[in-house]
Image 1 (cartoon, rainbow, N blue to C red):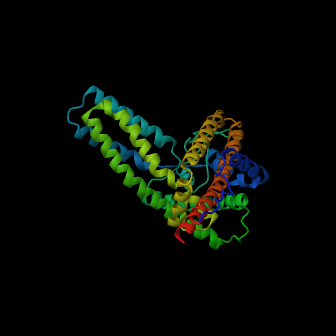
Image 2: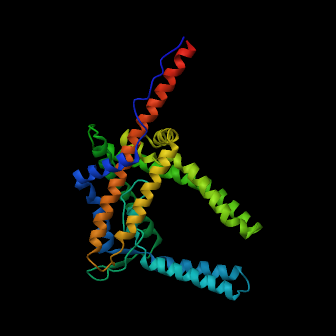
Image 3: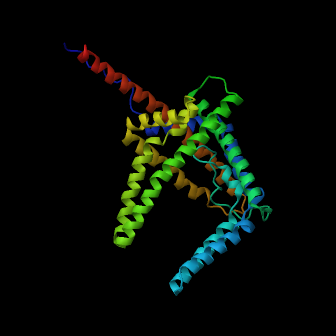
Length: 337
């Protein structure tokens, strides 16, 4: 028995449509920019929590052990050690423990979390040294917890404005989404370690066999990482769109991506190019100039718009996957009857 072929009612999610919708949503809801701007203002004008006093002796001990393990040190080895010491000194000099408030993958985007400016228009920021490991761990825990809470509220607000969610939002909802965000982060770290350690071992083996093989090996292994992590690129979205748990959100992300892998790849690549390209523009003013405030506001607007666009793309991608699944089931039913 012949049956009529049904056509899909929906189209695959569109890049331009998602970007336009994301920009419009943020332009009509400017309060979404408050948290990103506030975080960058704290990192720019506020105090800096430094670990230099605590970690410098540990770094020096590690370098001394490296020199001892190497036996006789050649000039090349001494140059490498000197460069390593300089890198660590520069890192510890500029590192601000408060920058960890910009948590990942659920968190508030920040222009200055990786920049760590050492000055501002008001002068040099007040530096507070953390001198004990127990204090460092306690402060780190509080910052991470606040970062995930604020990030969950931020992404939840974007999801509600983007998707017109009507369900009531409460402290219980925020707590549940924050908990699932923490679980998701732990799962992703586990996946990263499970994938990263074998890749590092393989890279080391290939480098030992022949340095010529190192560059192509890194390229190939990079493609493998992209292939593995691409399906879970929307893992946080299910937590805030459908209130799923971490594993359910990962599963939904895989369904959305696998239904349109090429389109998702182009979408993610476009967002990365836009964000990183404009970041260079936002960081053009020096840290001691008030013009950096323009960069902070611009970065907050673009980052929030891109996140909003990703929620639109995720919603349309999920609907497209549902339509495909329904169409596939409908096509198989007559053949089975």
